[in-house]
Image 1 (spheres, rainbow, N blue to C red):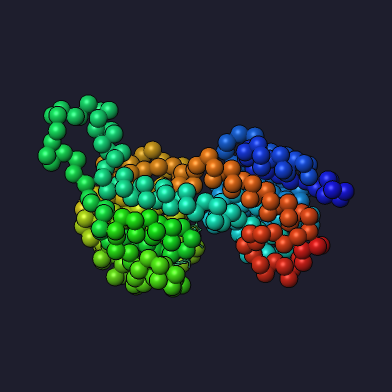
Image 2: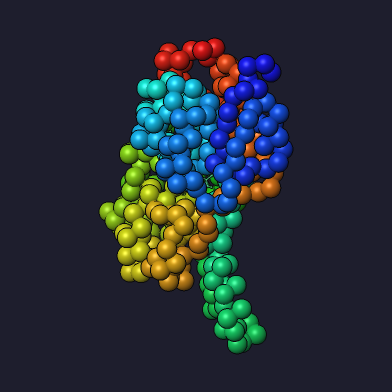
Length: 336
Ligand code: NAD
C-alpha cells in the first residue's frame, strides 16, 4: 500500500458495495451522495484535488472539467462501455488515462435489445396498457392487437461489434436473415452466422427490424435521419439501444406518425431523462424504456468491479486492462 494509501478517489455515485470496498481498501474515497450527477462546479473542484475519478455516463466530463484538473489526476474510470460523455482528446493531452467496461455487459445488453425488438413487434407494452386500461371488452379478438412476426424475418444490424454480434446470435436462433452494416467488416459473423455485409441503404430497404449498435460519434450523430427513415419498409421496426442522438427524434416522430415505418423500440433518447411531453411518448407504436439495456443485477455489479479494477491499476502505476486512449501512454508512461 504505502504511497497508494494516500491517493484520493472521487466516485460520482454510490457503487455496489463489493466494488466500493475494493476502492476503500486502497484509497481515500469520497462518494457523491444522491442519484443525480454532481454539478459541473463540483466536478471542477474535485478534479483539482483527487488522483482518480470513477464516473457514470451521465457525468459530463468535458474539456473545461479536464483542463481544471490538477497534476495529480491520473485516471477517469467510466462505469459503462460508451464514453461519449468524456472528452477523451482533452484527457489524452493532459496525460489522463480513460477506461471503460467493455464485454461484461454485452450479453445483457443484447438480451435487452432482443426483448425490446420482440416487445415492439408484438406490442407487449401496448397490450399491457390495453388490459389495465379496461379496453379488453371481447373475450378473444381475431384481429385484436395484431403485430409483426419475428421468426424468419430479416434483421438489419447497424454496428456489428460486440453487442451487434451478440444480437446476431440471438437472431440466428430465430431463423432470421441477418444483414449488417459497419465501417469494419466482421468476417466472423459472416462465417459463423451467415450474416451478409451490405451498404446502409440496402440494409434499410430490406430489413424488417433495424437495430442500432454503434457508439455515439460525430459520424453516427443522427445516422438515422429523415432520408434514411424514408428508405425503410412501412412494416419495419426501429430498435435503439445504442445512444439517443444516433436517431433524429423529430424525424422519427414524423415517420411513426405518418406511417413511413411501423413501430419503434427506444431505450435511449436524445435528452435523458426524456421529457414526459416528448411527442414520441404519445404514440402507441413506441415502446419506451429509461436506458436500462445493461441493467441486470449481475452485470451492473460486474461493470462496477471492472471500473474499480481499472482505476486501481491506473493509480498503482500499471496499464489498466480497458484503456480507451492508448496514446496517453506516450504522454504519461504507466509508472509516473
Ligand atoms: P463495439 O465497439 O464492440 O461495437 C461498435 C461497432 O460500431 C464497431 O464494430 C464499429 O466498427 C461500429 N461503428 C463505429 N462507427 C460506425 C459508423 N459510423 N457506422 C457504422 N458502424 C460504426 O461496442 P459495443 O460494446 O458493441 O457497444 C456499442 C454501443 O452500445 C456503445 O458504444 C454504447 O453507446 C451502447 N450501449 C448502450 C447500452 C444501453 O444501456 N442502452 C449498453 C451498452 C452499450
